[in-house]
Every structure is written in C-alpha cells, then in structure tokens.
Image (cartoon, rainbow, N blue to C red; front, side):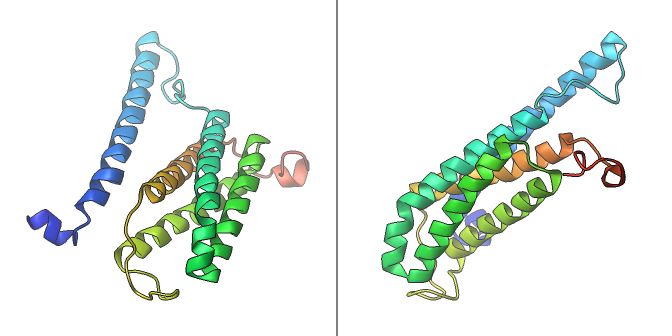
Length: 188
C-alpha cells in the first residue's frame, strides 16, 4: 500500500521495466564475473577479461531494438495524426530517424553517434514516462496522462535496450586519442 502511494499508482511500470532491467543487468554482471574468475584462474591478464558482448554485437542489438521501436512508431503514427498533427509528425520523423540510425549502426558508426543516440533515445523514454505520468503540455488533452498500452511498452522497452546497447558499444569502442591528427580513417 505504501509503495503504490509513493509511486503514484505506477507500481506496474516499475515491475514492467524495473524487474527485466535488473534481471538483464544481473545476467550481464554474472557473465562478466565468470569471465574475470576464468581469466584469474587461468593466469591470464585480469585487466582484460573475455567480454560477453563485443562492440559489433552491441551495435547489432541496438540496431535491432531501433527497428522494433521504429516499427511500433510507424504503426501508431496514423492514430497520432488524428489525435494531434504534431504528434503524428513526431512519430513519423522519429521512426525514420530510428531506421536510418539502425542502418548506420550496422555499418560501424563513430563513437560519437553511439553516444548521441543513447542520449536522444533516453530523452524519448523520458518523454514517454512524462506522457504516462503527468501528461504533456501540448496536444488535445494537455497535462492529461495517457494510458499505458502494449505497443507503448514494446517500443519503450526496445528504446531502453537501445540505450544499454549503445553504452555497451561505447564501452567496447577503441580509444582513438590523437588519431585525428595522424589518420583521417581513424578519426571517423
């Protein structure tokens, strides 16, 4: 009772997003710990243990989750055009951007794009949270919270996965300190 009051009736959101996120982070943590223990017991360097996910894998996950999110946004765009023109335009442009970035991710994007997409996608997730908790200051029903739907949850979950995968890809990206001064190929 106290938890539902403190969360303003959003216990379901915490369960839908929080529990899978904790499970995912726990599974990654266990795999990293196993790799470190394996490296330590075999006598190999502990500071560079075997990785569960490399940069290409993280980019592929980010690209896939962007495609899922874009598909949902394309599917709901017509309904949003009827609700409020700016919403329809936003969903259409967002879907186009997500598809374009997904292609770029498969081609090996620069580190900067990974960071920018992580930040922009996190902003989209925060916008969704605001639209479901306090409502938005624009639209036909200003400051009225929308109901949570299955497609919302699918798109937002895919976007959260995108943020995590982008962060993982950035963590595995090679550091190119001073590369711009020496090689244009490395500077991208």
